[in-house]
Image 1 (cartoon, one colour):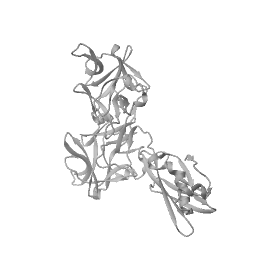
Image 2: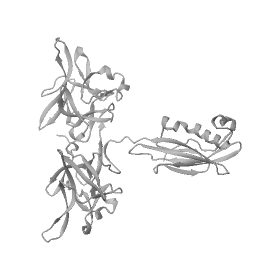
Image 3: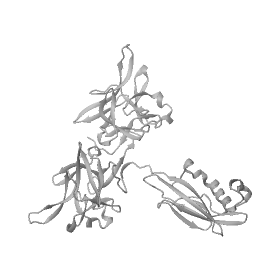
Image 4: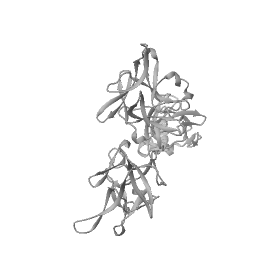
Length: 446
């Protein structure tokens, strides 16, 4: 691991340097006060952010007396490694989630008296895009039930659709066709479910009776749950116990593109996962903002709405909401969008059943006869867009009215046109102004 050297030796202190920070002339308190001054910028109010190892004092000397410092961490992912002259705080170099942790210094004198001081620190989450599998799924959170099918000629991520394909669970490589999947707690583990409209449907590993009267494992989508699952964190999948038949997981193997139940013995050798066996896990989809778009490639049109009480990514649905462009916080509702090259730039359109619907920045005439900017979904394109690479958004030029982009502001959740003057100061983007851009979620092209 890389290391940030904060201190590598014991510092010798003069009491006069710290006596003003301690109560009375207690040397142990003075040593504690010095540590506080040394590391106070790591307090939660001014949090120190680091994803590299760093060293801290292992002793403080006051008036010729050395007071050893013992450091502890409240998070198992952050380890304290003692060494001569210092202690190393060993942190993960890469974490998929933000970690807030506390390190505590305990100073001790020969009489057994102690003083403690604590500091909170932060390990930032690694900026990850694409399909991100979770270490532990949470109840009530929407996921995609997915696997990476490396056995296909063209490797793909396959998602549960929420429909059957014969006796198997249907899948798709198009994330917009994937069901939002949840887990619910029950005695002994969890059930897996999704919604078909307002109806709750369960994804079950269950049994059926063969012609010879024996039981065989199978998989079904049903109105009620059956065998509960337990979470196998090592393999990142759910496991159901069918008694004498054994334990089973959902996934696929070889080049099969449907989900089915398989005995866990197939993944007892963990090295087979991702090579010949592909168990399904729970994933979140983190769209990647496009810096240089390509004509004819399928994207989603979205923005990060940080002004909401619960910040969300809002996706263009391809429909109107009154006079505005409708959005949804669910990727499942997003419309695939494409760029079409034209003289002077691009047109932006949705495609459904081979029919193009253009997302236009255009004008309308007010009652006083003046022109006003607006946004419409129409059968034909109007003003071409140019690509603003600095702001990662499309700009439409309405002549004397000015130049406009599509996005939102404040807490509005629809997409509308705004003058580019609002984002001339690029620092406002993501703070008070939220221009919409193209995001790549690896959609298959039509």
